[in-house]
Image (cartoon, rainbow, N blue to C red; front, top):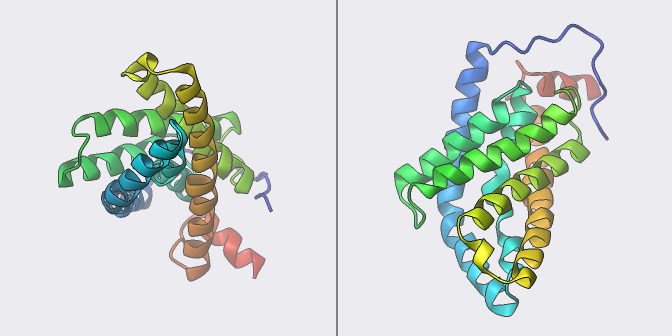
Length: 202
């Protein structure tokens, strides 16, 4: 069920707790990225070996930060900030992509952010989460296309964007929505709108 639009006055000014929680989410998501760099990286290669472009199915977890940031903090810039900082954590720990990880974090964060913006930062349901994950996937596809995939076949790029969208919607969107609900139900988000919604639903 989608969260209803609020009729109360909404402020988009970041609080100290917003900044702290964004940092915590970014570090936690960055650690998830570090693990997925091995699991997802292997899956990416395996899927691509089966069908060129099918590796997009493994990309969704790398798009999780923007969805989580947006759903939890619900302020302009939250999706971008959490995804970019999570990418920084992944790059700092060390991965096979180096500095380009930050380019991906920026693109993915913008992709998710634009979806939340399209709903005027007022709706935070499963649909918005799935669309944000898909938006992050499209933005990443555009980045990778510009950085080298333009030289690959139309077949590869078509399969790749379609599988990325599916993976982003499910592994980032649905999973991010479920994680937010779980955090809210645990009481960890008591100072956020998501936490208040969880209490009101009891």
